[in-house]
Length: 458
Ligand SMILES: *Cc1c(COP(=O)(O)O)cnc(C)c1O
Image 1 (cartoon, rainbow, N blue to C red):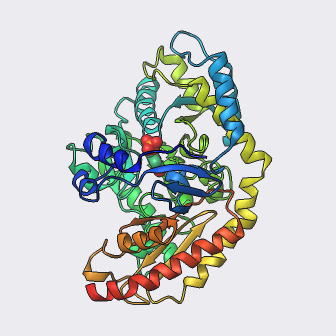
Image 2: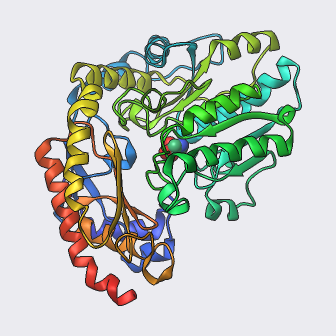
């Protein structure tokens, strides 16, 4: 049972001392402090005000095995007793770190046989950034420094992460991106290609990458980076053929291909990795979130043998973190992968719960507010529109409906996010049919409740 916290006091202290992530501090003060999440089990979180909420977001796209896994607690405690910390700077490594590298290499397969550890998804992308540029220098093509990414991509919140990402609001804070990152259009059919042939739209988006490569000079381009499907950007699933076209373009110009699997990794799309579901072969794979199901912070960057062979000729690669390969995090990640395997959560997502979610969400198809429903495995998005059959938005601009419906869902007992006007969800991979039905019922009810308020906006 949870401890008996003084919730009012915690909220007061939250306002007074704590600065939350990606938030409006004044708004938190005005609402009297953040919601205090005290404890959780399975697919449910509980707050200090006594609300029990179905976690449609798996924490923040990460708690793939659900809450309350006693064996993850045990393995962390065991590892802490035996060896709480050691580094990988001193020609040293710890047993769980080596074993986790082997384990990840087995899952990524092919040439992705080497793993660099970090503690967050952002750092995994910082590692990509530095490693790729260093690789090209060692290889004797030092002009290859440019990264090509997409608008509305999310690659983290560090300087490299925000720069690689394509969130304009984030760029505006901190004078980013740093030089050498080029952004091209995203394969967001509903928002930017509505009415066009979907597959052709995807191919046009891929062609935009080639156009940019030619504009900046292929000899200057280091890599293309993309999420197999965009998560934080609003669960944007690219049209069929997009990734195959992107891969062909990267190969044509000898450009490295980076799949940011921070959300898609570890079963989310019904395979271990999103690039396996979507059918392409990257050279580097940053991953995080589901790697430890969020129980401890750890991320990894899987790297192809071709790259590592070149790096071996370059002496020290002067990059890495105090906590790279942290033994306790690695031990927990290993056991987390054990759980995913033992319980068959990847196959279950592909064959059972993923299709079940898609079928359940289809019940909302006829709702007057629903413009599009898209899902792949256990990640989904619902577009809210002002007029059925269009991609029009309430108040004539994006962002009025998403937060409103999101707040209704939370008040009705379901945690989801509102990205602009898309309600996104990403439940734990252990979710049951009944819980999926509950999710869809709450969303339907919340849409009904939001309807008059949205109509008032016009
Ligand atoms: C969450 C996320 C990141 C950043 O991970 P952090 O652990 O928050 O630094 C990077 N890329 C993608 C695709 C993400 O979803």
